[in-house]
Length: 404
Ligand SMILES: Nc1nc2c(ncn2[C@@H]2O[C@H](COP(=O)(O)OP(=O)(O)OP(=O)(O)O)[C@@H](O)[C@H]2O)c(=O)[nH]1
Ligand SMILES: [Mg+2]
Image (cartoon, rainbow, N blue to C red):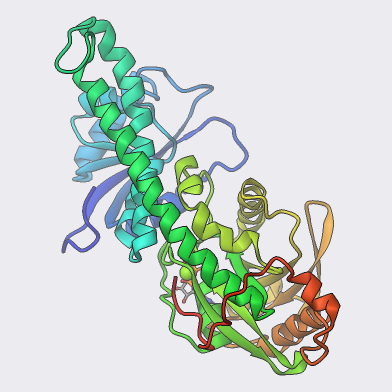
């Protein structure tokens, strides 16, 4: 894959195989966006139907021939599959087509690697990549073992190069995890300070590109990076948001977006970043209402929230991009409720970019905060009980929590 900073993005041929699953993206729209976000240029697309993946080539050999012909015809330098390929399928396809073949999982990892800015973000991506690599090696190793049959290179008898690599990767994973634990400790200290300050914590969650950072910027007048690309944000940024109506400030965190089939290792590696969401008092679930696939995207977000143990936290749905909704899809009321997993959840329509609906949103936030926390003036035993696990550290002197 090419680096996003290189001047000419690699022409890429997109392939999607429909196995009859409900979320199949016939236009390969999301894969196209992912490719562009990763510095590739989609030049042509092909979708086909199959009952099950071919163990050797993922698609049939006739289809692989067709991919080869079309890819050459369009001048593609790379082929990208919407589904995960096994290491053997990837290798066989590369041989058959004569071009580098990659899959969605690797592309997402690549984008994360390109975007990671903070020390923690870089460590998390590194961990996810190592974990991805280790599963590939394990599988390749079993295959090679049969061929080389216990020829020792170094170390104990029967140890192959692959096994050595695997051991090195295992050690690298361990080191990265240790470094992440250290960073996590610092983050915990900052969090405890906020708890000590009795801060009501709000986390923005949502599908990637829903407009979380734009909403964050509009609400707190910050300048978090917002862009029309997937995974523009990887690091958590937290700012104070003053809610006049509630007579208090809350903390608002912008963080990484979710996507369908988020590589498992990434969820695990980004646990520290995602933890911000699991410890929130309220989740602002931002939805791109202008995207026809928004119900599937919401379901994906719910799935990841369940994976990180945040499914039972109170939510407020923010249906964003109201300005981009055609007139026949404009809502009748800007505030209502919407069913999520069989439960009604309060919903507000906004346009984060145009600043529309912000008063309504602030009002709803203030109401929630008032319901959940008593007045800051009555610092009664109840409130202290609420935060009795907080540490003895001094409160954070700065009103700005900064980027973590
Ligand atoms: N039309 C319209 N576009 C919007 C609105 N809010 C955000 N966008 C656009 O949507 C794109 C994504 O916005 P971001 O704020 O970066 O989205 P995000 O959810 O933070 O995305 P990730 O960090 O990648 O997960 C940008 O091009 C924004 O300009 C809106 O209210 N209306
Ligand atoms: Mg963002």
